[in-house]
Image 1 (cartoon, rainbow, N blue to C red):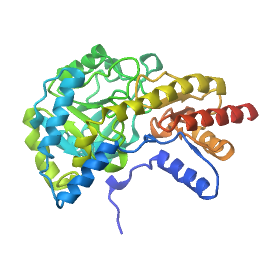
Image 2: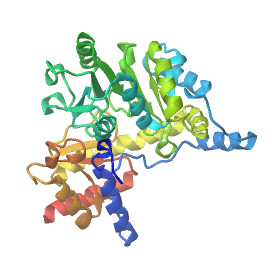
Image 3: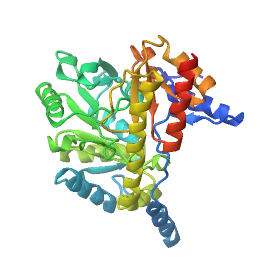
Image 4: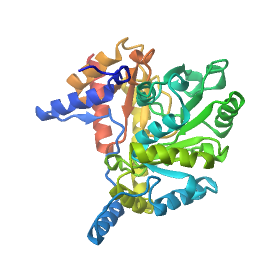
Length: 380
């Protein structure tokens, strides 16, 4: 059977690492998971209780394509609480995770062949989704001195129809401040390019609050999810905020592509937003883990890192150790029992010299993982 050219997407290497780690566990080994960007905690208990109660009341069917009004209103209120932004709930669209948000955004904004800039290193699925939809992802190699965030000089003079940024970013955890975000938005405005802000790691910040693009402009797409701060990866529920004139455009596409996000996940997500004590307890874990990583990774020999402002990753330059990060990751898994992600997922041109370490799991796991890494490096 013939396959389309749009089906030729690259594998998501971290998933291959997860599979290898799972095979090792099935063989009886204890593996420390530093490869996957998934909180070690589950959904807040209030989310589970709310869903149980809703299921007792009656069947959960389709919602309207834009999502339950109560959840859209609660998300809009959060923007006021977190950022001082007065957001019309009508601009909020509930999605099946951020992944559906990207599909909707790219489909609404770009035509086949359009060039869209993405920072490298960056989340690999940006590139793959754009390619599968017939668009042209344009990697913008970011610089260490800019903390791996794009600046206007990285794409000045390029013919781009859009720019996608992430802050806090995956895999680096670095953030754009208000001035840097504003400069990128202004550059897009000057050329007529659409601006998309991936804010999935908002809420997981350490020394300062992340800036939302909505503090600066209404003429942008903002994409977020309940997967990270709200610890609801498997529930597959997220949201996007779009300009008022774009709501009906996105709604029509969502109706046909997805019908709606899962009703059950709407209910759980709405309750999760008020589980502040549990969510902040999760943040205490991330803070402790971050401190351990920033101390332990250099001691183990991974000393070229950009301290993360948010999220739960550390991105390390391992060029002094290897020119093949995939082979090094496999060796670490085999000999140390620690799963880490080679940077090729995030930066096809330079990722052979980098590794990403996730610290989303328990503090005991992070502590044990760092000990194993130090032992491995000493013996290597």
